[in-house]
Image (cartoon, rainbow, N blue to C red; front, top):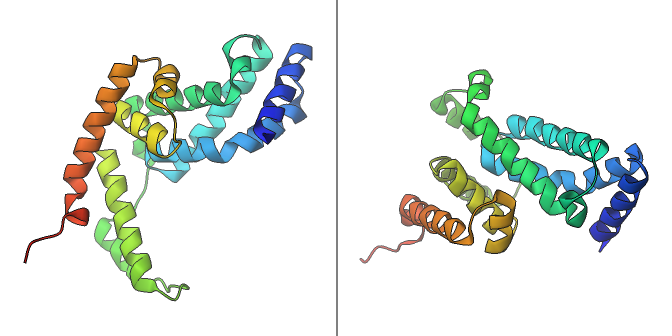
Length: 198
């Protein structure tokens, strides 16, 4: 309800001339959702932060430049499309990965093992973290389009038709990407849910 009111206010401001405060309010309301989408697609928090900034810069420039059309019909869908395309562009270039610095996996395990836990159930947290890491690795093995479709469907709870509209694909193509993504993820993670007969 609040998002709709903000979108309506944004539309009025665009018609009158974009007000920076209104855009900032709308951006603050959308920022976490856009960041999480970028994080899932890019598999890197720092890169997702940078991509999120790019997304809102592109949105601001587009709105202050012309400010009519599709973005006014559904601003959330419009900014989602900008986010997906920004992430896909970054994944295609892959040049940002040169600057990515991460410790060796063995060193990372040692560092994580020495970190003191504050929660009472450390074993459950460790298992949960392991599952999250496995899921992230499995998502990284998907194609860029499959990861985008999976993320929009399962993390953002978008309908297949909405995903098709955001990615500018046919619904059948979206279904095929989702089917392939789910098959690959099931194969990668099958040991987490398949019980072994004794």
